[in-house]
Length: 320
Image (tube, rainbow, N blue to C red; front, side, top):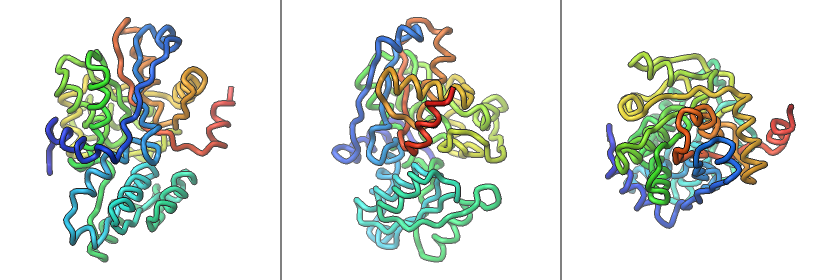
């Protein structure tokens, strides 16, 4: 697949029914009062393996034929896609090798191995993870499962927004984190397909704003590996599949600083009792920025994941 539609997101939802968790939508009157909008938090931090990535990984792997399943898959990821492919592969009986950076969060590295995948590490600053994955796949006859620039992956990710729109059908705005664009493109397809008038925004780290630069320039802009707390969004460029969907259906991309991420994490912990990783808090941080421009709006916020080392989490939230 080189493109996908609402029908593909709906088909992915059928494949995921009974396998992925239908995560809750959480509200908080205190948060609403603070922001001046009605916030609906789609809690993908409570998804299997702790992030939305399970949706796309299972959707993609479940479509492999018998020969491809027997040969196995190779994926590359800083953490959540790694865990997602490892878990989906275990559930489907597929051998999996995951290419992960040496500085990946230990909690994500340990979980990936725990799901039964073989892990190959690389230096994200000097080596090309996609090239390593291609070489491993060619050597072993395996299928490469990319983290975002794949229609089955992105359609699977869009099922989170599909559920959100089903649970809260009259949303005015939906905000999703942006790394490589799988979640945001899937969110845009699902949201605008069901409610064409809804506004869709992306949220990305200010230190890694390739998405915003690309959005404004009208073409894909590549940047060096960004230095940000949001390790799940340390991508250097949007995908060839995801970029045109985002440019066509998303209203704008909001830049979020690391300090704003920590503030959002702290608010989610104190107000909603939710543990969310830095990348997972991007959309709420962006909602804080956007809220003054849309008073009273019903805003859907996708909390993309909760895989964070608890020591680091405590240190971040304890910092003043």
